[in-house]
Length: 295
Image (cartoon, rainbow, N blue to C red; front, side):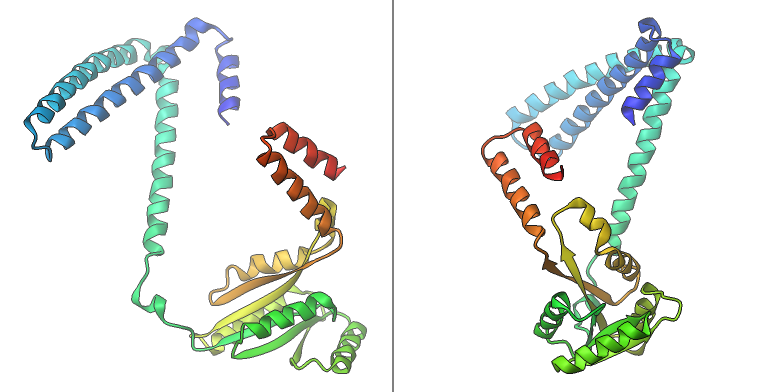
């Protein structure tokens, strides 16, 4: 953004240094004046608590020097603003004021979030129950890993949930579930309009409403792949679902990764990049290795 703004100023002022120098002068003397003001306030604050006579004399001398600098730079700044305001100094003032307001707004936002995140008495109360849901698209290794991990977490209630968009696939999954003797109940959520996200979100909300002091833990099996283009082919439904569930209070999400064979490529790439960093390689070396892996 700063580069684009600089290009805009160069074009607007026809790259004439005599016109652009007005912006520079304002910026320089504003920074000089504020720095001297800051040091003056610093010494004044330190003098309130310092008791050693020698140190106090040194602080008073430093404050006097900074006060003199503040007066000089302040006078020059006022002169520049009065004489060069219409010649382009107003642009620098407007830009600094805009950035100041933006930074103040960001600070207020962080302060507000900090107050909202402050720990209260009821934040240490444990949930009355944990209702765990393992999402099932089909019966395969990622599903079994997610079921095993969910069992290890020992929730109060554990069930597998499948969104049915195809009766044939639903029946095949139920037969496989019974044939393998999986000891977790499988609940089917019918979705005649082939929606996958909405039924899961509504079911999680219903569980939460039935037990407001409990939590719903959703376990989502995900593939770990090694090629960037594989990310476009896998995990898209899981990504959309997690995005929706993030806005549902009382619902916790856990991604259970399953590494496909191609994930070894990503692991080897990460190891090579770590080796380049340890060996003192440059960013260009790292980027070159990344591009070669993508190719």
